[in-house]
Image (cartoon, rainbow, N blue to C red):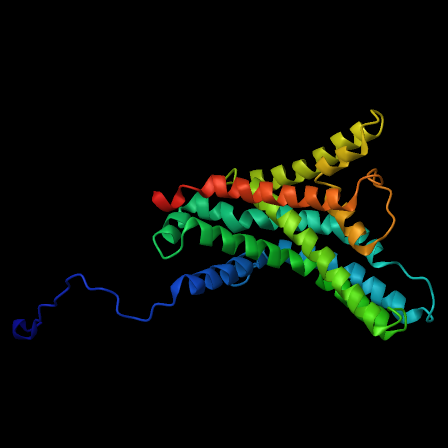
Length: 287
């Protein structure tokens, strides 16, 4: 190299002079990234297997309902929209248990959370993006398959009898699906925030729902506990709200509990989950 061509570069600290897109853009990018991360987008094939299997398990019953609507004459009594959830709730459980930890556990385990906090994100915006991503991902299995069922029923003469009833049914489907997504997504994230290991978080989510259902089932069954005990059952409470939205009969042990009490209990569990998340991340922005 010719010494005469050497150049001394001035590498002093310089302020960033590019376009600043703000906190809203950071929230949007983190939300979209989190959804893609959970679904295995732009990741190796092994990260796509579990979401693909669970999504398939959620949409296969919808395909069965479509076939039933296709081959049944108009006026035939077909399974109701609430019946559909009896086929998909196990898939929703598994989907929440296996995917929700992916939203926050790797960030804590690998130190990515600290990098986020050095940007224009803060704990509140970070959590808002993660919670929104959790709800959005679960909507894929709580809302859209039932909309497919409604569309097929309507197309083949089994749907609501009028336009008003059709939109009412659509509102019920969206409301019930969002309720399931918000409840399961929030509780699963709250449990996941207690550890940085995906496997521990998944086990904790499954055990929380299974054990609460079993314990409170014993209280209401052999021990004859009052009906309001059902409001503590995180396993059945979302389904109770769902049936109240559809105004459908369901033998859940909470028949004598008022609808506003059921709704308040579900909202209380969601707020409790958000409170756990806020407590776990309260000091991250100051580290």
